[in-house]
Image (cartoon, rainbow, N blue to C red):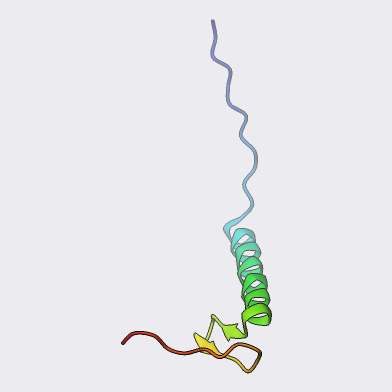
Length: 57
């Protein structure tokens, strides 16, 4: 019995993948900042309803 050849789809170029992931990451960071008033990119609290306190060294 002959083996079936696996169909291979075309992969997008690396630049397109990088742009897609960067947009998704940016969107997630904005949603997190809006919800928790914390900027994960700058690793710093923002003004808002939560008061952030540093824990640990």
